[in-house]
Length: 469
Image (cartoon, rainbow, N blue to C red; front, side):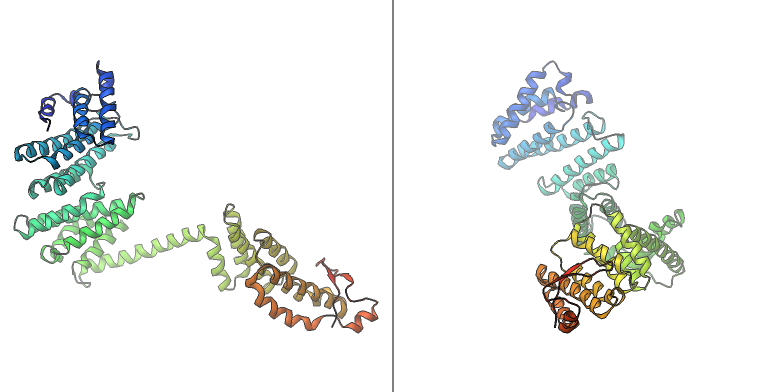
C-alpha cells in the first residue's frame, strides 16, 4: 500500500494552503489533470491509481476549484478502502487519523469560506456546512472507525454544538446508543444523559418542523433514538428535575404557545401530578392557546376549502350560503380537476332544484357540469327531474305538461345510455314517469300522430318525439 505520510506534510500549513484551490496555483493545469485522472479511476474502482493522482491534486489544491469538497470526501473514500485491506495495526491507525483529519480540514474550510457555496448567503450557512461534515465524521467514527465511545461522543457533541438545532438526521441514533451504553456502564451520569437527550429531541423536532425534504427521515431517526433512550428513561428522568429545569423556560416565555405546550406535555410525560399548581396554571393557558389556534386553523382551512364549508352550510340548511361557497370554490380552483368542478356545478344545480326551486338556473348549472364531465349521467338525471318539476308550471294544459314529461324521459334515457352507474336510477324514474305520457286519445283529438316531433315550449326549449300510452 502507498504511504499516507504525504498528507501530514500539508497539514501544518496555514489555512489558506489547507483550503487552497487550483485557481490560485501556478500548477492549475497539473491539478485539473490529476483531478480528472483520480475521479476517472474511482469510477472503475482503481483505488491505487486514484490515490496516486488524488495525492497530487490534494497537495496542490485541497479545495479543488474552491467550490466543492470533492478532494476531502474522495480522499476519505480512498482511505476507507485502504483501511479495509490493511493488516498492519500501525497503518490502520495512520489511516484512521488521516480520515479524521480530512473531515476536520473540510469542516474548517467550509467555516472559513475556503470552499465557496453559491447557495450560502451568510456565515451561519457555512457554519452549518461545517457542522454536517463534523456529523459525518462522528458517524464514521461510530460505524466504521470503531473509535472509543467517549471520544466518539465528544465528536458528536462538537457537531451538534456547531450546528445547533439543524443537525443531520444520521446523528440521533448513534448518539443515543453511545449515551445508553456509557450510562449503563457507569461512565456517564444521569444529568449528562438527560442533557444530551433533550438536545437531540429539540433538534429532531426543529428539523421535522422546518425540513420538509427530509422530514420523514428525521421522524424515523427520532423514533429510533427515543426507543433506545427508553431503556434508561425511568432511571434518568423525574418530575422534579423537569419541573425545575423547564420552569425557567416558562418564566422567560409565559405567553408563547409552543413553550407552554412543550413544557406542559413534557411534565405530564414525566409523571407530574395534574393537580400541581404549576401544571394547572399551564393547562388553563394551554387550553386557551389550543382553542385560539384551532379557531385560526379552522378559519384558514375554511378560507382555503370553500367547498367543504359549502357542504357544512348545506347540512345547516343555509342553502344560499352553500351555493355562494360552491361558487367561491369554482373561482378559487380555476385549474382544478374538471371532475371536481363538475361536482361543484352539479351540487349548485341540485340545491337550486330541490331546496330553492330555481329551475332555470338549476338546468344551466347542470349543463355546465355535464359539459365538464361528458361521461357522467347524473347531470342529465337532474335535468330530467327539473323538467318533471317544471311540467305543472310550464304547460298550459294537461297535454302540454305531458309533453314536458316526455322531455324528462328523454333525459333519463340519455343518462342511462351515457353512464352505467346511472342506469338503475334512470330505470326507476323512467318507470315512474312513463305513466304520465300523453294519452293516445288526447293526442288524436289535438291532431297529433305518434312519432311526430313536438316542441315543449316554455323556457325548456326541447323538441321531443311524441310517444303515447
